[in-house]
Length: 349
Image: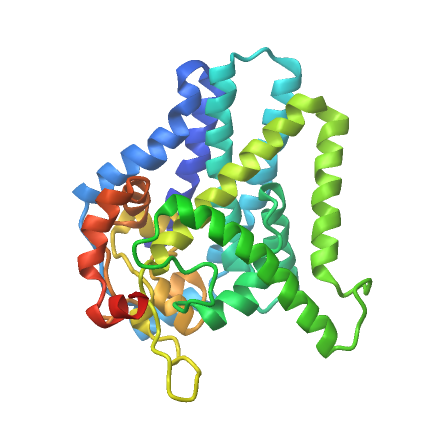
């Protein structure tokens, strides 16, 4: 029964159902749930730093229940996308209701779309990686698969990594730098992969080219079926989705940096190069994303098996609460800067 706790991730789309059904000011219920109710619960509920026993680990590793929880998000994400687009074409909404639905559906894209895509993108089975890429489509972030797997995991907590926020860098500055740099980094990585395999730009193995075509085709289909209103809605929800991802990227490695060795290479990624949180609500809503250090230690490890490490820097709050704090840079800096090791701060000076 304890495994059913991960159904808490479904409370995000459930909140979006409330937003869509009741309309009016309820259209904003999902952002209120995600950034007010969940942080409030995180403060109230205890943390859990325990790790699995070997027997529990064996049972959870072979259980397909955890995989099907991820697969379930595919009809959820595309169901919300289709239903809301259809609703916009058949129902008259006030502008504020549309804005509320943009945020509500966009948050579903971020939590149940990109976050799940991140987990599936690290799997060994090809079909699971394909499902992960599919979940990135509505947020126009299919390039994330390449940059994250071949770029971020090699360069995390270094100045070369677009997804590592610098010390004293605000969230809003990071949104621009990370979004732009990750996209171009993905193209560079793709070019390198093609060159290593002696393939041309127009090779069928050019995944970045395919991603571009798929995303253009997606927008073209939305425009054809749902006119300009549908296109603007699809664009806006996608932007909310990937900005939610970038906010998570921001808090995951903020200010942490690896030492550069005399050889010019960086020290290997250790458990001290990611911010972690043991706050229960954030853990289960985000499929254990908050145990980020162990994920970097072994990226193929499934979410239900991730461990807590004593040497990992711990956030004073859970990831959802920390995301809210990051929206207010002076408050974020005052809370997080004192927690960054002094030797890491000096690297940025």
